[in-house]
Length: 160
Image (cartoon, rainbow, N blue to C red):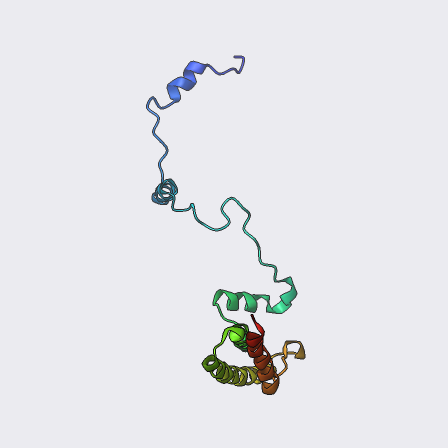
């Protein structure tokens, strides 16, 4: 014997009616979902999924990860967001001031006064909650804010 295999022996050992590969239920469901386009609009399709770099967090990396997944933030960050929203409201009042009517000017002053009071309350809370002074903010000065509003109102009278 030369050690060569006879192809007829292999053919006789093969199954004359090969069975199609059996899909598991999960494989079949995934294939059907792919064919139906269920995965077509997933984020990062055809791209690498970005990894979060928490190397700067050190020992706190796991805590940050858990808070982020729970859509939670430390109290001082939530307060800072509130301050930013109030400052955006102040900016919106100042932006619309040149177009305000005489009646609207009184409304602008009252609204600005409320926004400044709310912002100063939130800023005081933030300054107490924030872990370092880098996150602190200065309180707004109501008289300065009202003067800025008056200048914006006067810009309406200067327009042609």
